[in-house]
View 1: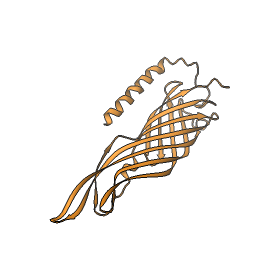
View 2: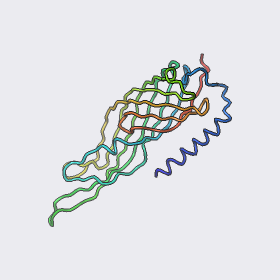
View 3: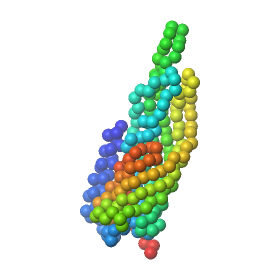
View 4: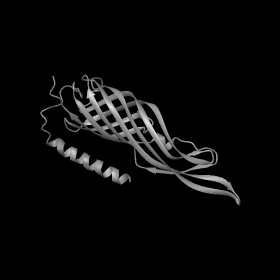
Length: 216
């Protein structure tokens, strides 16, 4: 499963690196401003250390087993309000399954039943970013901090409840607190990474594409 995810990402990153050598957008790195006003940046990334699949408890009579599934997937669309401030619509999708066992009393004693809970999380929210390139001056590296809120739709196919399981849907709101950076391999394309809290991952890695506006 992970190989299927990583191979297309690595292939695309290689393509971006090759494209960077022949980038003829007509824009260049001027001063130390990653953002120009009215500029849009699209980002995709994969999450690392999923809080949803690691931080859960089981009620009495149930025991944890192994957990499997792909990494969380992120999408983000940013708009530059000023040279150092942007706002963004953020999206995330996470799907995995954790296995557990249920012990119950039958006519002939204690029995064990093995179950699987399929979890799907779809998230969307907004965030504001402040870019620190005027304070941290490293060529082509543009750090940032971001804050926001994310609304989550969470579906459990077999949530343990009492001595059985039920299908359950939750709606939650989580804070979005991130610190990260982009490293530009060309004026349009950059490698992206961040760390922080949004419940779905501690860190994420991916790439971004910048679209310049002709608006002055």
